[in-house]
Image (cartoon, rainbow, N blue to C red; front, side, top):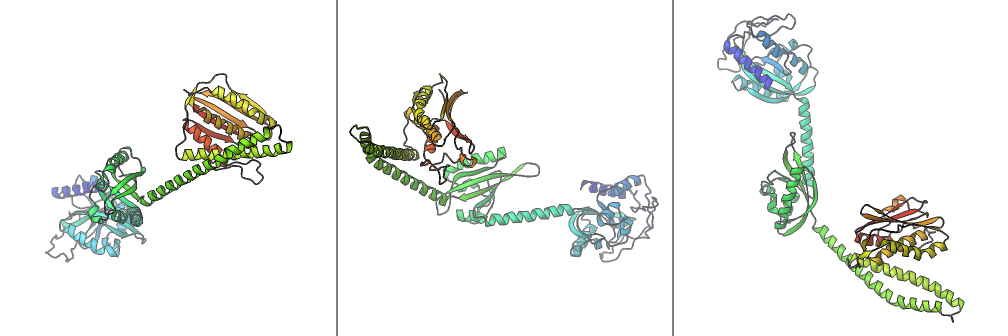
Length: 542
């Protein structure tokens, strides 16, 4: 409130020089006259009524500073009142009229300034004015006030003692702070709301100052550390972390502060209380003041003991499931191989009659399907247990693609589909497992044949930057957009309608993705329902 302080300074300087004779103004005549001189004695009794001279309709300045002082008072954004010992208003500037809802400032003259204060604030206002009268000027207080129309507002007041027409009076400067007070009230309510939420949170909520010291902790952190809140506040947060976690926390603390970024879900260890080491997950966010300066950091701490236990149980369950699948697949594979062998002998033996050969071919076809299923299960269990081995070597993809083309021609021809190939004569070499890459390509072409009844199937390859792109495209039933992101999931099958002609386990595409991933490549699908599908694999070349 620098402006008001300057006016007060001027008033005091005027009084010391003896040049200021009065501070009242007639807004109609724009002329100034002196007050009648009166006795300034308090007689040691603050309750004694002080009688001022007759208040004329006009006031005047009898010195060269009158015009300057008039402009300061008339144009001030803050209201200015001069009141006597009893609180009666002797002078008011135009801003007072605006603040309290009067048409003209002179309407307030003669009224009690205390009438503008809310009744609950009368005692405070009177006490503050007596304090000013005793020489204790400056910022007084914030009061709830009432306008001429009965509207409640908030005002901020400063005051000082002056000589007015030879008598002691108080001058007060009043600023309407209703908007600020409402904003502050809302912020306080909001702060209390969030504090209540923090106190009720099952997760620990902390605030940390720029030096890493705790400035606030909720009850949940008390329980984690088994220490009272008043003993925790003021201590460094690192004191509650394990030795292995301190360095990591300091690094993320610096990152949050330096980069003004939120860091979430960092795993640390709490080393306090009877529980010993407690695994926790920490998220941190910076807080700044209105000048965009870092003031503190808010931190949430989540006890993940139960989460880790469940995660370990799931891993254990997954390991047991993988082991079971591996054992079951091996046990199934053992009798299937000789059965397949004998069926092949029966179907190829010249002495076997046609009827038996027909049954043998049906049995052989289903045996091969069963063997493929068993091999898929074995592959999945190897991927899950990370025991899948790859024989990586320098490969010529053109040779592999040509072989796949020759192998798949009969099956494509049986369905009377056009077979389109665009394979360059030369492609850069890649590092890969020949058997596994053939497995992927055969799987993709087999799927294309399975779900295409008319049209064509295409195999295309090309070099693009440091990658080789191979695509298998068909004109079959296609895949809905909602299914595209799921088809590479284990056991997922997009075609699940009751009239689905082709059977499968939902493992083929999962295995394809795992194999390509092991080759540092990517695989994806592009499709629209009813308009065919395109599977693309991308593998880096040497």
